[in-house]
Image 1: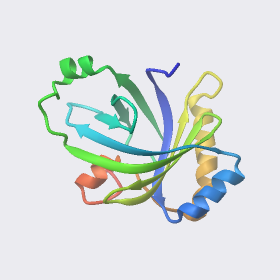
Image 2: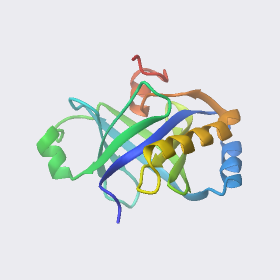
Image 3: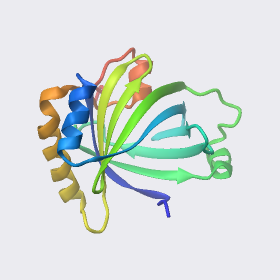
Image 4: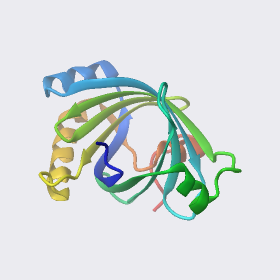
Length: 179
């Protein structure tokens, strides 16, 4: 059963060459799970980020999350939120999205780590790691795993990014939050 909330340790950067990234993931015995077209509509809320994710042949889901913008390897707390709760708590049903992010995501998995190669419309290629904090992998252990993977992929990575794709699009592609 899919969890309704959790903590991930994340890292994101520009990606220079997707073919090399695929080869490196294969060498690490990561398994390609899916290639998914995703549309994320972001809505303005008082704190954190609220998005509605749409994928072909699936019902839309609402995801609320908060994360640090001051670290490259950082925690992200997330939760799936039922639509009726979203409408009641955030009253977004009559709002236009702040921004819409369209991407083609290659989703690879290695133990509790999701490796994403994203082709984001209007931005380009990105690399993202999400290590799910679970009972057998503490936040500290997840940070170590993510840092080891960043070091392994480093030759094919571009600049690190601390902003969400939504913020990047809103700011014309600049990758770092301003404090």
